[in-house]
Length: 119
Image 1 (cartoon, rainbow, N blue to C red):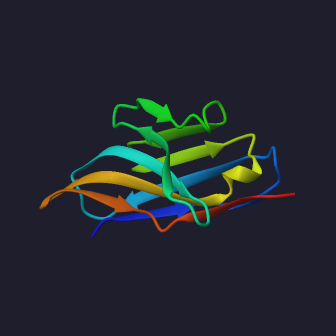
Image 2: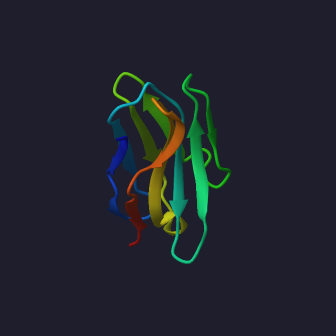
Image 3: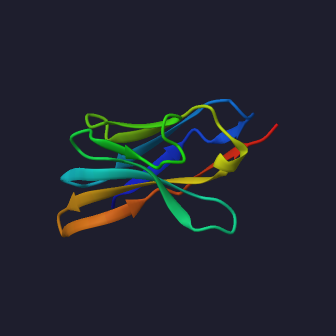
């Protein structure tokens, strides 16, 4: 069974920083693309950032220049550095990854980490 466990959420003032991490565990052959999504109350879940197994990244326009996605393939982790935070960044942040397991390729999701930006 594959699991993604997130950590690092919390309350931060506008302009502050946080770092979210997501660690994969369980039985799998490989991890391809990894993502961070976020969902604010009453809104749909939106893609924030994406990173390939080779390290190529893409960030949503709303976070470009402020957030940075990274991964450590030796530790099976993906992180999201959040800088210059704004109140509109308040949301539950989810990591997502595509795994190759013995019975095929599947998407898995983390449990979510609350990020609240408020003074």
